[in-house]
Length: 165
Image (cartoon, rainbow, N blue to C red):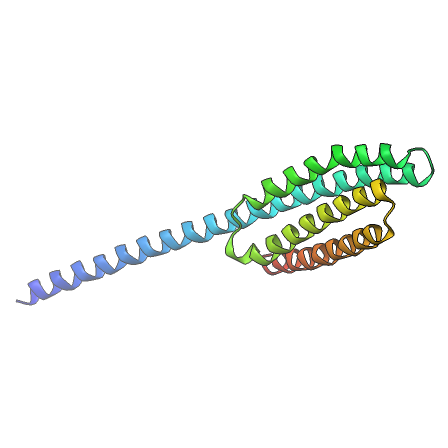
C-alpha cells in the first residue's frame, strides 16, 4: 500500500513538473513573441515616420522655392498635386496596419497627424488657385494640428519604448 502511494505521489510530482515546464515554455514563447511584435512594430513606426518626414521635407523645400519667387502659384499648385497622392498613399498604407494594443494611441495620433497634414496641403493648393487668404490661414491651422498630433504620437512612442527597455 505504501508503495502505491509513493507511486501515485511520484506520478503526480512528475505531472506537476511537466505542467510547470509546459507553462514556463509557453510563457517564455509568449513573452518573446510579444517582445518581438513590439520591436517589429516599433521599427515599422520608425521607418514610416522617417519616410513621412522625408516626404514633408521634400515638399517644404518646394514651398521654399515658391516663397523665393522661383515658382508661380499655378506651378506650386501642380507640385502640390503631385505630392498629395504620395502623402495619401503613406496615410493609407500606415492606416491599414494593425498596431499592438499598446501602440494604439501612437498610431491614432500619427493617423490624425498625417490626415491633418494632407488637409493642410489641400487647403494650401486652394489658396494658390484662388488667392483666398482664409484658405491659407486654415492650411496653417491644419499644419499646426498635424504638428500637435505628431508630438503626442512621438511622446507616446518614446514613453512606450522607454518602458519596454
